[in-house]
Length: 134
Image (cartoon, rainbow, N blue to C red; front, top):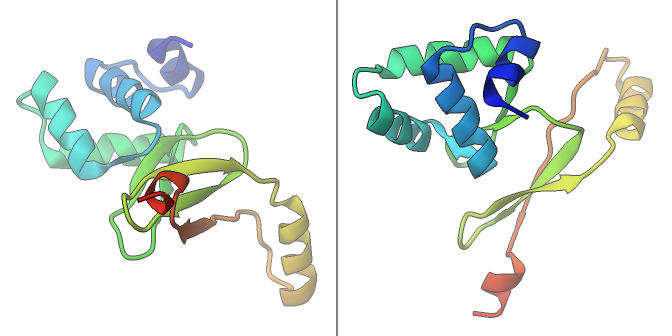
C-alpha cells in the first residue's frame, strides 16, 4: 500500500517527513527513535528530534503506529497491524511478531480483576534459533 494512502486513511497530511517515517517503519518492522531519527536526518537534515516525536505521537493518536515497550530497552515503534505478541532475542536483540489473539486473555482479565481492559502488550524474551546454534 502506498505510504501516502496509509497516511490519508488515518486523516493525516502526507508530508515528506511522515511518508519517510511510514516507509522506514514498513521496511524495518520495528525501529527505535534513535535509528528512526538517524535515517530521517539522512534525508531531511533540518528535522529536529522534537518534530520527529511530534509526528510519532500524532501517528500513535490516530492508531497508525504503536509503541512496543521492551523491558530494559528503548521503546520501538511499528506500523499498527492485527493483534500479535513479540519475541525478543536476549543475545542479538532481534524482535519478531508472533500471531496472538488476546481476546480470551482480555476476557479472563476483566472477569478476574473487574478492570475495563482493552489492550494487551506482550514481549517474550529468550534466545532465537540462530543464537542457540552459536
